[in-house]
Every structure is written in structure tokens, then in C-alpha cells.
Image (tube, rainbow, N blue to C red):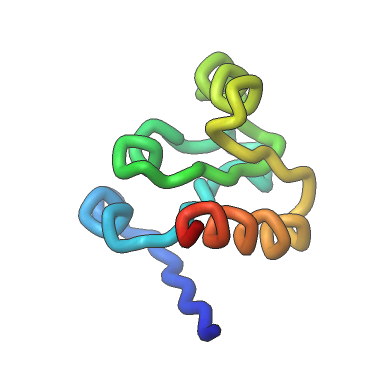
Length: 92
């Protein structure tokens, strides 16, 4: 199985791509920048994966993780195993 990843730094571009993705890592969350909105990938049925810095979206991130609707990782290398799990969930 081949995995393709797309990284974007363009504001507003991701909304049109979430529907095509198998999974979504939400950036701005592995560094102290407060994270980004996890509702965008969730609206397309994607399980958002994000890092520990979600201060700007703390309540929604906490609720999603508690409900099993999102995955929070502590380090970048943890994304690989969780990303694979998200793809397996979608494929099942």
C-alpha cells in the first residue's frame, strides 16, 4: 500500500482537500501556537489527529478525544502509527 501525504501552508486550501483525504493531521499543534480547528476535517468524516498544543481549541479538542472522535499525540513520530490506524478505520 502506498501512502501519499500533502502538506499545505496556504490559508483556506485545506477545506477543499479534506474530502479527498483518508486522514487529517491538524497542524499548529506540535509547537506552542495553539492548534487549528479540528471541526474542518471532522465535517468531512475524518478523524482529526493533533499534537499537545491545542489551547485555541481546548474545549472542542478535549470533547472529541473523550468521545473517541479525535486522537491527540504527544510527539511527531507518534503520528505515523495513529495515522495508519485512522486509515484502517476508514477502510474497514
